[in-house]
Length: 367
Image 1: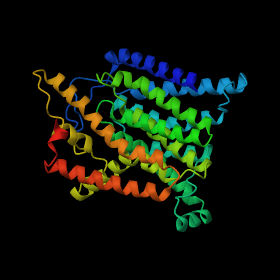
Image 2: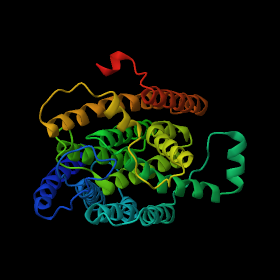
Image 3: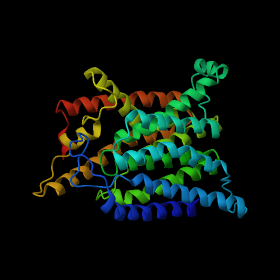
Image 4: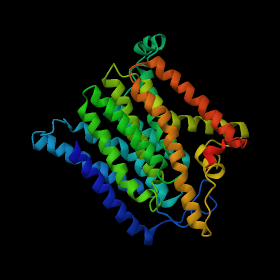
Protein backbone atom coordinates (compact mmCIF):
# COMPACT_ATOMS: atom_id res chain seq x y z
CA UNK A 1 0.00 0.00 0.00
CA UNK A 2 2.85 2.38 0.81
CA UNK A 3 4.63 1.90 -2.50
CA UNK A 4 1.40 2.44 -4.44
CA UNK A 5 0.90 5.67 -2.52
CA UNK A 6 4.43 6.78 -3.44
CA UNK A 7 3.64 6.09 -7.10
CA UNK A 8 0.41 8.10 -6.88
CA UNK A 9 2.16 11.03 -5.16
CA UNK A 10 5.13 11.20 -7.54
CA UNK A 11 3.09 10.83 -10.72
CA UNK A 12 0.60 13.50 -9.61
CA UNK A 13 3.49 15.79 -8.61
CA UNK A 14 5.31 15.28 -11.93
CA UNK A 15 2.15 15.64 -14.00
CA UNK A 16 1.32 18.84 -12.12
CA UNK A 17 4.71 20.25 -13.17
CA UNK A 18 4.05 19.20 -16.78
CA UNK A 19 0.62 20.84 -16.74
CA UNK A 20 2.10 24.07 -15.41
CA UNK A 21 4.67 24.16 -18.19
CA UNK A 22 2.12 23.34 -20.90
CA UNK A 23 -0.50 25.76 -19.61
CA UNK A 24 1.81 28.75 -19.89
CA UNK A 25 1.30 28.58 -23.66
CA UNK A 26 -2.07 26.89 -23.99
CA UNK A 27 -4.03 27.91 -20.90
CA UNK A 28 -7.55 29.28 -21.26
CA UNK A 29 -8.13 32.64 -19.62
CA UNK A 30 -10.49 32.44 -16.64
CA UNK A 31 -12.96 35.33 -16.82
CA UNK A 32 -12.35 38.31 -14.56
CA UNK A 33 -16.12 38.67 -14.15
CA UNK A 34 -16.54 35.30 -12.43
CA UNK A 35 -18.13 36.03 -9.01
CA UNK A 36 -16.31 33.13 -7.33
CA UNK A 37 -12.88 34.33 -8.48
CA UNK A 38 -10.62 35.37 -5.58
CA UNK A 39 -7.19 35.30 -7.20
CA UNK A 40 -5.12 37.60 -9.38
CA UNK A 41 -3.53 36.49 -12.62
CA UNK A 42 -4.11 33.42 -14.77
CA UNK A 43 -3.74 30.12 -12.93
CA UNK A 44 -4.18 26.78 -14.78
CA UNK A 45 -7.33 24.91 -13.69
CA UNK A 46 -6.11 21.49 -14.87
CA UNK A 47 -5.14 19.87 -11.58
CA UNK A 48 -7.66 17.14 -12.35
CA UNK A 49 -5.31 15.87 -15.07
CA UNK A 50 -2.51 15.43 -12.51
CA UNK A 51 -4.87 13.73 -10.04
CA UNK A 52 -6.22 11.34 -12.67
CA UNK A 53 -2.71 10.44 -13.84
CA UNK A 54 -1.61 9.66 -10.28
CA UNK A 55 -4.64 7.45 -9.64
CA UNK A 56 -4.41 5.57 -12.92
CA UNK A 57 -0.70 4.93 -12.44
CA UNK A 58 -1.05 3.63 -8.88
CA UNK A 59 -4.17 1.55 -9.52
CA UNK A 60 -2.63 0.10 -12.69
CA UNK A 61 0.54 -0.77 -10.77
CA UNK A 62 -1.55 -2.43 -8.07
CA UNK A 63 -3.44 -4.57 -10.58
CA UNK A 64 -0.18 -5.50 -12.32
CA UNK A 65 1.49 -6.58 -9.07
CA UNK A 66 -1.58 -8.52 -7.97
CA UNK A 67 -2.12 -10.41 -11.21
CA UNK A 68 1.42 -10.96 -12.47
CA UNK A 69 3.58 -10.90 -9.35
CA UNK A 70 1.38 -12.97 -7.07
CA UNK A 71 0.07 -10.03 -5.04
CA UNK A 72 3.08 -9.71 -2.68
CA UNK A 73 1.30 -7.09 -0.58
CA UNK A 74 -1.93 -9.12 -0.22
CA UNK A 75 -4.02 -6.17 -1.33
CA UNK A 76 -6.04 -8.22 -3.84
CA UNK A 77 -6.42 -5.36 -6.30
CA UNK A 78 -8.03 -7.29 -9.12
CA UNK A 79 -9.38 -6.09 -12.43
CA UNK A 80 -12.40 -4.76 -10.50
CA UNK A 81 -10.29 -1.80 -9.41
CA UNK A 82 -9.86 -0.78 -13.05
CA UNK A 83 -13.65 -0.53 -13.30
CA UNK A 84 -13.33 2.30 -10.78
CA UNK A 85 -11.18 4.15 -13.33
CA UNK A 86 -13.64 3.44 -16.14
CA UNK A 87 -16.56 4.74 -14.08
CA UNK A 88 -14.57 7.87 -13.10
CA UNK A 89 -13.78 8.91 -16.65
CA UNK A 90 -17.06 10.52 -17.81
CA UNK A 91 -17.29 12.86 -14.82
CA UNK A 92 -13.58 13.68 -14.70
CA UNK A 93 -13.09 14.21 -18.42
CA UNK A 94 -16.26 16.30 -18.56
CA UNK A 95 -14.81 18.52 -15.84
CA UNK A 96 -11.49 18.77 -17.68
CA UNK A 97 -13.35 19.73 -20.87
CA UNK A 98 -15.03 22.57 -18.95
CA UNK A 99 -11.66 23.65 -17.54
CA UNK A 100 -10.19 23.78 -21.05
CA UNK A 101 -13.08 25.47 -22.83
CA UNK A 102 -15.33 27.02 -20.13
CA UNK A 103 -18.21 26.28 -22.48
CA UNK A 104 -19.67 23.03 -21.15
CA UNK A 105 -23.07 23.85 -19.67
CA UNK A 106 -23.99 22.73 -16.16
CA UNK A 107 -26.65 20.33 -17.44
CA UNK A 108 -24.10 18.47 -19.56
CA UNK A 109 -21.67 18.18 -16.66
CA UNK A 110 -24.52 16.93 -14.49
CA UNK A 111 -25.37 14.35 -17.17
CA UNK A 112 -21.74 13.17 -17.25
CA UNK A 113 -21.59 12.70 -13.49
CA UNK A 114 -24.87 10.78 -13.76
CA UNK A 115 -23.23 8.61 -16.44
CA UNK A 116 -20.40 7.88 -13.99
CA UNK A 117 -23.04 6.86 -11.46
CA UNK A 118 -24.72 4.55 -13.96
CA UNK A 119 -21.38 2.93 -14.83
CA UNK A 120 -20.56 2.48 -11.14
CA UNK A 121 -23.87 0.80 -10.37
CA UNK A 122 -23.63 -1.40 -13.47
CA UNK A 123 -19.93 -2.34 -13.42
CA UNK A 124 -19.28 -2.30 -9.68
CA UNK A 125 -22.75 -3.19 -8.44
CA UNK A 126 -22.77 -0.22 -6.08
CA UNK A 127 -25.96 0.39 -4.11
CA UNK A 128 -26.79 1.79 -0.70
CA UNK A 129 -27.99 -1.31 1.20
CA UNK A 130 -29.52 0.39 4.26
CA UNK A 131 -29.85 3.67 6.12
CA UNK A 132 -29.42 2.38 9.68
CA UNK A 133 -33.07 3.17 10.46
CA UNK A 134 -35.10 -0.02 11.09
CA UNK A 135 -38.39 1.20 9.62
CA UNK A 136 -36.64 2.37 6.45
CA UNK A 137 -34.25 -0.57 6.07
CA UNK A 138 -37.11 -3.06 5.88
CA UNK A 139 -38.69 -1.06 3.08
CA UNK A 140 -35.35 -0.86 1.21
CA UNK A 141 -34.95 -4.64 1.53
CA UNK A 142 -38.26 -5.10 -0.27
CA UNK A 143 -37.42 -2.43 -2.87
CA UNK A 144 -33.76 -2.86 -3.94
CA UNK A 145 -34.14 -0.13 -6.57
CA UNK A 146 -34.12 2.42 -3.75
CA UNK A 147 -30.53 1.53 -2.87
CA UNK A 148 -29.48 1.95 -6.51
CA UNK A 149 -31.30 5.29 -6.70
CA UNK A 150 -29.55 6.56 -3.56
CA UNK A 151 -26.18 5.46 -4.97
CA UNK A 152 -26.90 7.33 -8.22
CA UNK A 153 -27.89 10.42 -6.24
CA UNK A 154 -24.68 10.30 -4.19
CA UNK A 155 -22.36 9.70 -7.15
CA UNK A 156 -24.08 12.34 -9.27
CA UNK A 157 -24.25 14.99 -6.56
CA UNK A 158 -21.02 14.67 -4.57
CA UNK A 159 -18.70 15.76 -7.44
CA UNK A 160 -20.67 19.01 -7.72
CA UNK A 161 -20.56 19.44 -3.93
CA UNK A 162 -16.76 19.31 -4.03
CA UNK A 163 -16.80 21.75 -6.92
CA UNK A 164 -18.77 24.22 -4.78
CA UNK A 165 -16.23 24.18 -1.93
CA UNK A 166 -13.28 24.36 -4.32
CA UNK A 167 -12.79 28.10 -3.99
CA UNK A 168 -9.62 28.67 -1.95
CA UNK A 169 -6.12 27.27 -2.20
CA UNK A 170 -5.96 23.91 -0.44
CA UNK A 171 -9.59 23.85 0.71
CA UNK A 172 -11.28 21.13 -1.35
CA UNK A 173 -8.02 19.21 -1.71
CA UNK A 174 -7.39 19.01 2.01
CA UNK A 175 -11.03 18.09 2.71
CA UNK A 176 -10.76 15.29 0.14
CA UNK A 177 -7.47 14.08 1.61
CA UNK A 178 -8.88 14.02 5.16
CA UNK A 179 -12.05 12.20 4.09
CA UNK A 180 -10.11 9.60 2.07
CA UNK A 181 -7.85 8.85 5.03
CA UNK A 182 -10.83 8.60 7.40
CA UNK A 183 -12.57 6.15 5.07
CA UNK A 184 -9.34 4.17 4.69
CA UNK A 185 -8.94 4.02 8.48
CA UNK A 186 -12.36 2.43 8.94
CA UNK A 187 -11.75 0.12 5.95
CA UNK A 188 -8.64 -1.16 7.71
CA UNK A 189 -10.61 -1.57 10.93
CA UNK A 190 -12.94 -4.01 9.15
CA UNK A 191 -10.10 -5.75 7.29
CA UNK A 192 -10.76 -4.38 3.79
CA UNK A 193 -7.19 -3.71 2.68
CA UNK A 194 -8.07 -3.44 -1.01
CA UNK A 195 -10.57 -0.64 -0.47
CA UNK A 196 -8.19 1.07 1.94
CA UNK A 197 -5.45 0.97 -0.71
CA UNK A 198 -7.73 2.64 -3.27
CA UNK A 199 -8.50 5.44 -0.83
CA UNK A 200 -4.96 5.91 0.49
CA UNK A 201 -3.61 6.21 -3.05
CA UNK A 202 -6.33 8.78 -3.75
CA UNK A 203 -5.11 10.76 -0.73
CA UNK A 204 -1.50 10.41 -1.94
CA UNK A 205 -2.35 11.72 -5.42
CA UNK A 206 -4.16 14.62 -3.76
CA UNK A 207 -1.04 15.36 -1.70
CA UNK A 208 0.99 15.49 -4.93
CA UNK A 209 -1.46 18.02 -6.34
CA UNK A 210 -1.50 20.07 -3.13
CA UNK A 211 2.25 20.61 -3.45
CA UNK A 212 1.40 22.92 -6.37
CA UNK A 213 -1.89 24.23 -5.00
CA UNK A 214 -1.09 25.26 -1.43
CA UNK A 215 0.08 27.75 -0.36
CA UNK A 216 1.27 29.38 -3.58
CA UNK A 217 -1.81 28.60 -5.71
CA UNK A 218 0.19 27.73 -8.84
CA UNK A 219 -2.32 25.08 -10.00
CA UNK A 220 -6.06 24.74 -9.37
CA UNK A 221 -8.02 21.48 -9.32
CA UNK A 222 -10.73 22.87 -11.56
CA UNK A 223 -13.96 21.05 -12.28
CA UNK A 224 -12.04 17.94 -13.34
CA UNK A 225 -10.27 17.62 -10.00
CA UNK A 226 -13.38 18.34 -7.95
CA UNK A 227 -15.43 15.81 -9.91
CA UNK A 228 -12.73 13.19 -9.50
CA UNK A 229 -12.61 13.69 -5.72
CA UNK A 230 -16.37 13.52 -5.43
CA UNK A 231 -16.68 10.39 -7.54
CA UNK A 232 -13.83 8.47 -5.84
CA UNK A 233 -15.12 9.32 -2.37
CA UNK A 234 -18.69 8.41 -3.35
CA UNK A 235 -17.49 5.04 -4.71
CA UNK A 236 -15.45 4.36 -1.57
CA UNK A 237 -18.20 5.41 0.83
CA UNK A 238 -20.89 3.26 -0.81
CA UNK A 239 -18.56 0.26 -1.20
CA UNK A 240 -17.52 0.44 2.46
CA UNK A 241 -21.11 0.45 3.72
CA UNK A 242 -22.19 -2.17 1.19
CA UNK A 243 -19.41 -4.64 1.99
CA UNK A 244 -19.43 -4.33 5.76
CA UNK A 245 -22.68 -4.41 7.72
CA UNK A 246 -21.00 -3.10 10.87
CA UNK A 247 -20.25 0.27 9.22
CA UNK A 248 -23.12 2.70 9.65
CA UNK A 249 -24.29 4.44 6.44
CA UNK A 250 -24.27 7.66 8.45
CA UNK A 251 -20.49 7.41 8.88
CA UNK A 252 -19.70 8.68 5.36
CA UNK A 253 -22.64 11.07 5.62
CA UNK A 254 -21.13 12.77 8.66
CA UNK A 255 -17.67 12.75 7.05
CA UNK A 256 -19.08 14.60 4.05
CA UNK A 257 -21.65 16.77 5.79
CA UNK A 258 -19.68 19.98 5.09
CA UNK A 259 -19.69 19.80 1.25
CA UNK A 260 -23.14 18.16 1.20
CA UNK A 261 -24.78 20.76 3.43
CA UNK A 262 -22.94 23.58 1.66
CA UNK A 263 -24.60 22.38 -1.54
CA UNK A 264 -28.07 22.00 -0.01
CA UNK A 265 -27.87 25.38 1.72
CA UNK A 266 -26.64 27.03 -1.47
CA UNK A 267 -29.60 25.62 -3.41
CA UNK A 268 -31.96 26.92 -0.69
CA UNK A 269 -30.38 30.39 -0.77
CA UNK A 270 -30.77 30.63 -4.52
CA UNK A 271 -34.30 29.26 -4.47
CA UNK A 272 -35.34 31.92 -1.94
CA UNK A 273 -33.83 34.62 -4.14
CA UNK A 274 -35.44 33.20 -7.29
CA UNK A 275 -32.07 32.34 -8.85
CA UNK A 276 -31.17 29.15 -10.72
CA UNK A 277 -29.23 26.63 -8.53
CA UNK A 278 -26.65 26.42 -11.31
CA UNK A 279 -25.87 30.14 -11.15
CA UNK A 280 -22.49 30.89 -9.53
CA UNK A 281 -22.38 33.41 -6.70
CA UNK A 282 -19.99 34.66 -4.01
CA UNK A 283 -22.02 33.77 -0.92
CA UNK A 284 -20.61 30.37 0.04
CA UNK A 285 -19.21 29.97 3.53
CA UNK A 286 -15.56 30.01 2.46
CA UNK A 287 -16.16 33.21 0.48
CA UNK A 288 -17.74 34.91 3.49
CA UNK A 289 -14.84 33.79 5.69
CA UNK A 290 -12.45 35.21 3.10
CA UNK A 291 -14.19 38.59 2.95
CA UNK A 292 -15.33 39.15 6.52
CA UNK A 293 -12.92 37.25 8.78
CA UNK A 294 -9.59 36.96 6.97
CA UNK A 295 -9.01 40.69 6.67
CA UNK A 296 -5.90 41.43 8.71
CA UNK A 297 -3.35 41.36 5.90
CA UNK A 298 -1.43 44.56 5.21
CA UNK A 299 0.55 44.64 1.97
CA UNK A 300 0.71 47.16 -0.81
CA UNK A 301 0.89 44.54 -3.53
CA UNK A 302 -2.70 43.59 -4.45
CA UNK A 303 -1.89 40.12 -5.77
CA UNK A 304 0.22 39.24 -2.72
CA UNK A 305 -2.49 40.52 -0.40
CA UNK A 306 -5.17 38.46 -2.15
CA UNK A 307 -2.99 35.33 -2.15
CA UNK A 308 -2.30 35.59 1.57
CA UNK A 309 -5.99 36.11 2.35
CA UNK A 310 -6.81 33.11 0.18
CA UNK A 311 -4.29 30.92 2.00
CA UNK A 312 -5.46 32.06 5.44
CA UNK A 313 -9.06 31.20 4.64
CA UNK A 314 -8.60 27.45 4.14
CA UNK A 315 -7.43 26.57 7.69
CA UNK A 316 -10.69 27.96 9.10
CA UNK A 317 -12.63 25.50 6.95
CA UNK A 318 -10.20 22.63 7.63
CA UNK A 319 -10.91 23.07 11.33
CA UNK A 320 -14.63 23.27 10.60
CA UNK A 321 -14.40 19.99 8.67
CA UNK A 322 -12.67 18.27 11.58
CA UNK A 323 -15.74 19.00 13.73
CA UNK A 324 -17.52 16.33 11.70
CA UNK A 325 -14.61 14.04 10.83
CA UNK A 326 -13.48 13.38 14.41
CA UNK A 327 -16.86 12.17 15.75
CA UNK A 328 -17.44 10.20 12.52
CA UNK A 329 -14.22 8.25 13.01
CA UNK A 330 -14.94 7.71 16.71
CA UNK A 331 -18.54 6.51 16.30
CA UNK A 332 -18.52 4.88 12.86
CA UNK A 333 -20.67 1.98 14.10
CA UNK A 334 -23.42 3.95 15.88
CA UNK A 335 -26.04 5.38 13.51
CA UNK A 336 -28.00 7.35 16.11
CA UNK A 337 -24.92 9.14 17.42
CA UNK A 338 -23.84 9.94 13.86
CA UNK A 339 -27.29 11.31 13.00
CA UNK A 340 -27.16 13.52 16.09
CA UNK A 341 -23.76 14.91 15.07
CA UNK A 342 -25.06 15.56 11.53
CA UNK A 343 -27.88 17.66 12.98
CA UNK A 344 -25.47 19.42 15.33
CA UNK A 345 -23.17 20.29 12.42
CA UNK A 346 -26.07 21.74 10.44
CA UNK A 347 -27.05 23.92 13.41
CA UNK A 348 -23.44 25.09 13.83
CA UNK A 349 -23.11 25.82 10.11
CA UNK A 350 -26.28 27.90 9.94
CA UNK A 351 -25.33 29.71 13.15
CA UNK A 352 -21.85 30.49 11.85
CA UNK A 353 -23.19 31.62 8.48
CA UNK A 354 -25.71 33.99 10.03
CA UNK A 355 -23.11 35.36 12.46
CA UNK A 356 -20.74 36.19 9.60
CA UNK A 357 -23.50 37.75 7.49
CA UNK A 358 -24.61 39.92 10.43
CA UNK A 359 -21.02 40.91 11.34
CA UNK A 360 -21.24 39.21 14.74
CA UNK A 361 -18.06 37.19 14.53
CA UNK A 362 -16.05 36.98 17.80
CA UNK A 363 -12.91 39.07 17.83
CA UNK A 364 -10.62 36.12 18.53
CA UNK A 365 -11.65 34.51 15.23
CA UNK A 366 -10.65 37.64 13.33
CA UNK A 367 -7.25 37.77 14.95
